[in-house]
Length: 130
Image 1 (cartoon, rainbow, N blue to C red):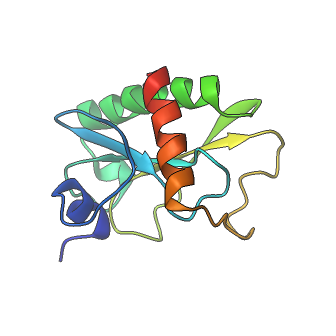
Image 2 (cartoon, rainbow, N blue to C red; image 1 turned 120 degrees about the vertical axis):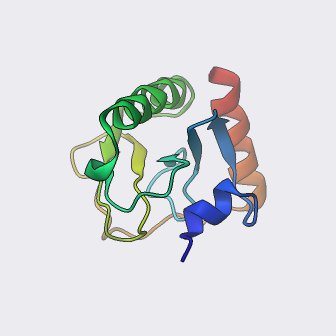
């Protein structure tokens, strides 16, 4: 069964797209911990990050780095933190989260509720910084 991320890759489910190439896709998390919280995925459906072949895993990280640098330029944060949990959706993915403190990446915290207009504005800012 295709994951929700595979459906996003295929265009069956909309997303707030940040960046895309032949192998990877970055889009805003719709349940963000912070404004600019972005997910980076390989288009290839693979459940566990460390089951990706070495070239794809390296490429995913290089792609994520470009997106993180853009987030860092436009979001009010000290750094862009990275988290890999891999339990919530059976499709390898990286969370890029703007942070200002050690405990800003706490997935038990309440998620932000943003409007469609806010998501679009954030996406446009990050895209312009790429």
